[in-house]
Length: 148
Image (cartoon, rainbow, N blue to C red; front, side, top):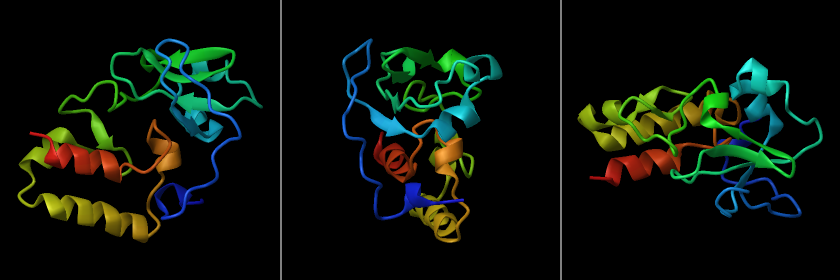
């Protein structure tokens, strides 16, 4: 499996960017693999094979994924979405099970980041499959650590 999601280099962005049809926010492109792994089976049947999907991180928007011809909401996924529902038990790091509750009780917050980084370096990261945003969680974890 390719671990480019956590690599220092990013893949080139799609030629055009598409805004969320509900809130106008331009999200990040997400691989169809991410949707296939996280959508409930009923929703997965609606995936369009050639479509480019986008992730909408806005917490006040019910859309998680969108394309030119449709949307998927959090209810269509098998997992809660951190950006949509930053509750203590919602995963922030989907690969290694870190939640806000786990981070808050960790005696050494830097050790949390170091542990995730070590797992990524060891090739154990599958963000493109496990994380709804289809990308590395380290920025989300860093934000959670500094958030009061």
